[in-house]
Image (tube, rainbow, N blue to C red; front, side):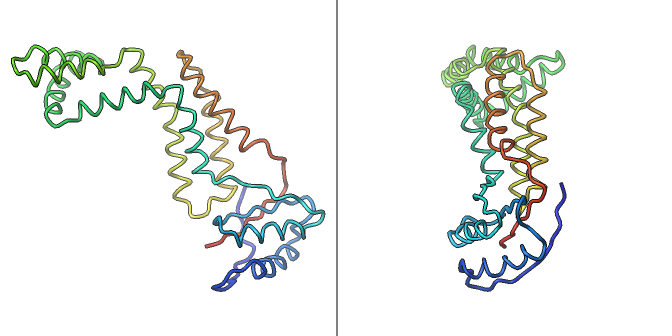
Amino acid sequence: MYDSTLSIIEIGEYKITSNIVSTIEPVLEKFGISKSNLVSITTDNSSNVKAAVIQLSTKILPPKPVVNIFYAAHTLQLNVNANLDKVYDLIIKCKALIRLLSEKKNINNYERHKLVLAKKKSKTIDVIQDLVNDLKNSTNIEHQHDGSNIQEKLLSNNEFQIIRDLVDLLHLFHKAIEFLSDSNYATLSIIVPTIKELINHLNNINNKFDIINKVKNTILNNLISCWLSSPKYELYASLLDP
């Protein structure tokens, strides 16, 4: 899929619906964008543009209903956030643990234990548990309290692994959302390959934890329903509205 700029036209300061239609219509006719062709509008969400799209769609013969191309970055973000409910409690627990370990009084202790246990190739949970034991055995009441708080929020081995796998699962989504957000005009030649790469990424994941597979399958199904359920068209034309 490739982009090709057919025309650059200045509409003017006041872009009322009739001006947009009268400016774009000759371009559609000139390049034969009609019949089996789809006109997609890459633009802002202003009412004048949406009204112009509706008018333009009725002028293309035979008339076609307006096809909404979802704003990719925002849709991806909503898709991911809406499907994290299955691991919501674990995420909250993990955030609480990070917050405790990020407190200034605990950072140095954590780093010290991390360096000591690094030689033994210890897991993160072992480093934190060693810190907890050190704090709870301290003669300082505040340190004992900190140790108990961290112990209460400490994740199990399986929970740590689920969080790691979740990060691996969603890392590519984070990169895709950043990429699409940085594109002033994410046309279909950018959106479609990005979505297909995400779908391929999810299809290749088969995790040992059912909860990760459930999150993956829900996100995957939503991606397919949003992006791959529309008919195939030969030509996509985008009106870019700076």
